[in-house]
Image (cartoon, rainbow, N blue to C red; front, side, top):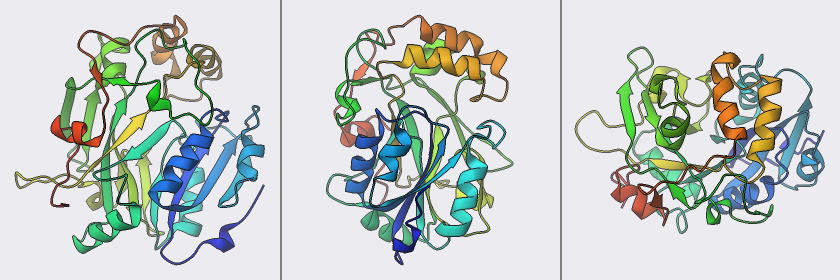
Length: 307
């Protein structure tokens, strides 16, 4: 729909994402990641009907593709994005996110992504890990109003600080982390079915690489080792997950009917039903979000050796 990839310069940090009906999130998403240092966005629009395509097409630092094809059949968009990364991302640090995700990391307000990737390069690292943290409001999930230009974390100001389980997957050597608000509220009776929270969203890409399962695991497996094995810590980040904005109940009705978001949609029927009931995710044990230093103090992210 709009190809501006000729603008991509050597060393530019690129962001890849797949969207459907995200017009209410995109202005802040783009502003946040531009401020981090993303120089070009490569976006696949999957049959949006809310004006997302028009909004995206008008962005001067963005190239846009459109498809009516099945999101589920494309490995939940990863086949589309992998093709774009093979063609345009090789040799660049590439950030792969969803529109409801905001990346933060140590010193993110004062040290842009080129500073982070430059430091990672001196450490011999080609990938950077982040924990997905579900953010939620104090009241029912569909109450309130958040504008497209607003920072969603002003409304979604709470998170679960401590209910996380971690194990290493032997085959891919990646972490498998579950927990947070979605596990607590929607999967309390079956915690092993809860969403996976570990991601490796930032990679110095090569055309031979591929994401295997969303951004939870990559090939070759060495890229998944974004954690220390010697008792120390590696620098890591947080993905602030802003799914639970007003309108989530109506969206859940639509997504349940479409059945495009999970490998076995019937297993997630109760999840969608719970969301359409407009639940309150906040409890007395919820923690108010104050910034990356708080996340580090809680052990959810780390500066590692980046001082």
